[in-house]
Every structure is written in C-alpha cells, then in structure tokens.
Image 1 (tube, rainbow, N blue to C red):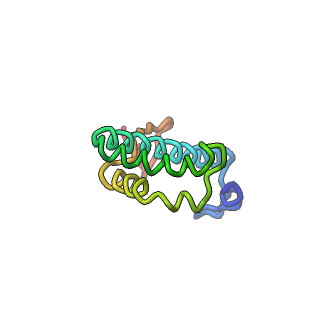
Image 2 (image 1 turned 90 degrees about the horizontal axis):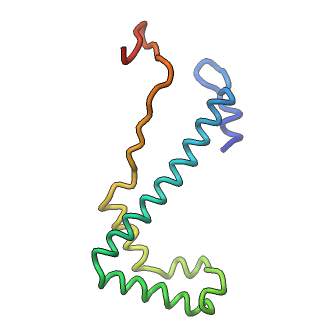
Image 3 (image 1 turned 180 degrees about the horizontal axis):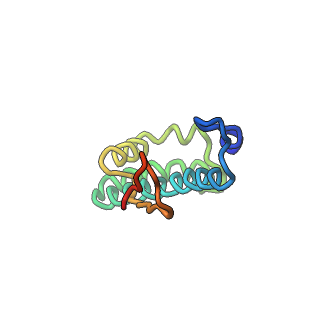
Length: 120
C-alpha cells in the first residue's frame, strides 16, 4: 500500500506529499480497526438477544477448541472453514446492522471551490 501511495500521481502529475500519504494510511488503518470492532459488537449483541443461538455457536466453537487440545494448538484454515453457524451469524449481523460508525471530519483549512470559500 505504501508503495502505491509513493508512486501515485494526481491529475496534475504531482506526487502525494508525505502528509497526504500519512493521512491516507492512517485513514485505512483506522477504518479497518473501527469496522472490525463494530462487527464484533453487533455479533455479540445479536447473540445476547438469542440465547438458543448463542448456545449453538458456543457448541460449534467448543467442538473445535476440544479438537485443538483445549486451545493449545493453533486454529487451522480448514477449521475456520468448518464453522457454518458462526459464519452465518457474522453474515446475518453484517446484513442487519451498519458496521460503519459515524466519524465526522471537519476541515482545518478553508477550501476554495470555483472561486468561492466553501462553508463560509
């Protein structure tokens, strides 16, 4: 990703400044962290609201935990693919709830557009 930003040129054939590159990378990292936390929050909320479903997901997870020597062995890719109920819960949570939190931004400098200062 950094390589892409370093080689990127805008419509005026100018490279991004160090500040622009840092802003873009921070934005991507923040977005990834924020949405992951949001998904986990919604999954937990929906499981809390349906105790029977929670027990079924726990049983699915405990079966894998037990085959991994009580969690002492790492989870395998194959095991992540063998969680159909957990997968459906995550997918339904994504369908039911917005994972995008409301992060508002405010311009720190005036922006001139078509000869006018926007927001003034």
